[in-house]
Length: 537
Image (tube, rainbow, N blue to C red; front, top):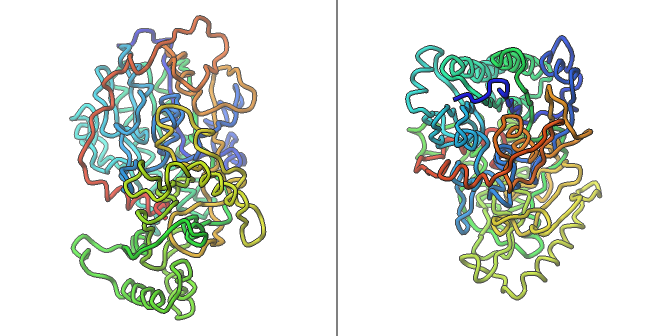
């Protein structure tokens, strides 16, 4: 139901784009659509969440709330010391298109992360994206079959690391977003068209060839232009990325550091090396019970080195001594190198650890709160303060401080889910450091691309901010552009100039019941996708 066609809004999500990475291509030849909007009105930086990771950033963009309110701080949720990949019901906040649906506006949402299982909209459609299984149902339930009968198989994930034709692989994946938008445009008189492109992030993790990256972005930009044309003469357009992208220099293995300093214990677990290998080394389903010769050799060598007294984080050095590390590094690319031994965190017997793979946060193991708490509740604040002081002084092998800030969680987040956040929040210096939960040498020099805190924002409408906005501003701004109430619980502001008498309401009340149905689907295949891009290190 389209109440007011003149308020038709298009929200384009381009995951991981950073002005510093694309500025050379923002011109009338390469990224023409972005160039036209940037020249017409305003292009600014968009500050992400902390941490600037996809699974907490997009829920913040779609809800207008910080992670302390919606409850997602990483790729996983925590149940004691166990982790589970997040789904839509783990996000304790209504999404923009769900509120629009409750207000009887017609919304189309395509490929946005953490939208699975899809909410049942009264007046629109949802095609889930990142973190959903490849075979996830769409909403309405017959939508996938109808689309695929006309356009071919819809894919959420490209084949990462393909050596045949990476450009075609990524472009074909992006094309489905455009094709789905055109397909649904024929079926719905929509008010909000929200389409997200995840490949704009993945290519920086997966590819080193700048020319190939440019070619893919050029096609994505073309598809964005095609989607904007669906809005007719004068739609309101917003283009936003959830975080930036740029150069990293190091991986800091925080659990190895915590082990060295007496906070973290390790134990024997499953070997980590082969969780992130590329397609050429992946075992097929019928081979899962057998180890490859190389895996067996590494496991045997790692176990032997551990038995003769090498601590877990020095095993990789030991593999070098026996000639295996170079073999592994030659076969496995740098972004897939993880623990070279079968040592993992012994959570129950540790005082502190990074529970998630790269959550930029340290959990304290507290008596009365955690299943096998080691730190008396009366010593929590003192222990946390001491650990913060120590982490603030950590330096890399070049002598540079690793962190710009090490802060208690309540200084970073606010809301009912603050206690679900890591006890200590880590802010890497200039975001040049991955902070890994694997057990390896404390530092590894590892030049690569990864997330930065500032993404991009463009609109064809006048914006009230000068050179920077926050990711929380997008939901209230789009709501105001549509003409639906702005959330009274938002952490953002309306950025549009010239809008008076903004109506406000509690989105929890307006969209009660949306996004609450969970699933029991096996998500291991999705974890493999994350591993391919280095998120499971």
